[in-house]
Length: 139
Image 1 (cartoon, rainbow, N blue to C red):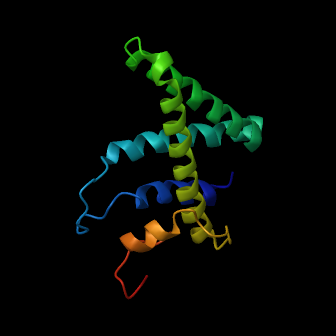
Image 2 (tube, rainbow, N blue to C red; image 1 turned 120 degrees about the vertical axis):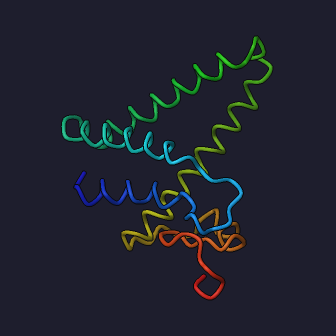
């Protein structure tokens, strides 16, 4: 990937943290975004050697494996009875964050990514992909 794309992805993750003057209840620890950026940097390095599709698949497979291990560790002997709920939760979460990234990266790069599944939620919260939280006049 190009340096512009890397910088844009880094900026996109940083933009998702609420500005200090924005009254948000759930602020995200900046270290969370540092961790994301470390994974992205590694992925970008691997792209040069393996190509974007292989690295994308490796990242997805690795995330699934890691999340399965975390789930099994936390399930306290209830893995079987909680499996369907865990799968639903993780599938919904992945779909949501994928929507968020398509929306923000599409906006930043001027690419029409189609109607977001989160459009109503964005509107209700005053969020504009690629711009962040804005006043009613800007939305």
